[in-house]
Length: 420
Image (tube, rainbow, N blue to C red; front, side, top):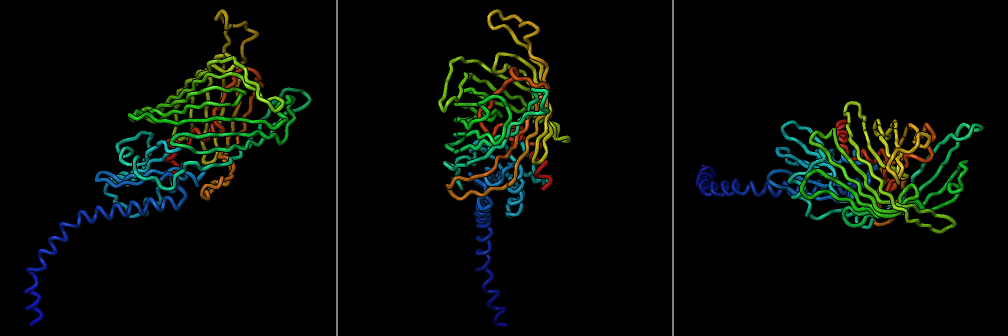
């Protein structure tokens, strides 16, 4: 009886304490949410992601990640989504996962509490402004890779042999610099060839370039890359690439503008010629998500001054992209501007392209020790009409190919996340 008396006597004193605890709970919940976000960011770092940031706001929870351990970004994003789903985050408000490339934002993957699903878009919003100035964990600055690119080329120019083949290994030293910047030096090593041209028989430098990626600061969904250096096709110069995604992100346009001249590596010496040409192309693209197929129609001015239209149909699988192309060109007289004679005009050309992502599909980095790995792509291109002079293009980086161009396609990423 005395105990009950003491209990009733203490009730008036306990009531203010309980009220104070209730008033403190919102602040405590905010602190707990911030702690959970930091723990989730640490788990992302432990999983091998680079340039990880995190911030908690009343409107959303935001993370940035950059794929370093996973060779294919879509597979990395799928793993990051799994980590965030198991991190105990507040699922009553949106969770934003911003995927970056060289610290430049590429995609925003958003968890919608209303549907319980994740959706990818190329567009940015206020979440990027909230997280971009947060401290970076596992910074990629000055981290290097030695990436080996194997290449197979076939041609059919003589009647006594079905095909002539060229097998090459092209290791590239690649280093990440400040946001958006990368330096690449590539060496071309012939493994086997029965091509007649002597230049295919010797070890020689390949692409030597510095590239700076960028994205417009006004969230207009324009991305680009400015490159300078030695490119493919025995060309050196400066090139600008840019792309814009429409609100319906199945559609986008891209362009490449370059002022290039000829350069050859002969007798262990560079020979630079000053014969600058303006090469350009502009393309409209459509991606059919159900078929995972990309359709592209491109207008171009090629390296030797010929103009043309190029149609491509590319099917993107998980670790492989297979494409067919057809191209039709016109050649104009550079002095008069008139059409060149019919006999000098480019023939209609076509062929197919197979680009395969090589295993291993994961490669962990150990601090600043250069990481040696195979490339994300093995390229095989077939020129059906054996065109040797016209329709020549150039690439400014070793990693530019069908597979890498599709890395940050929002519908492709959604497809991979949905399967995991």
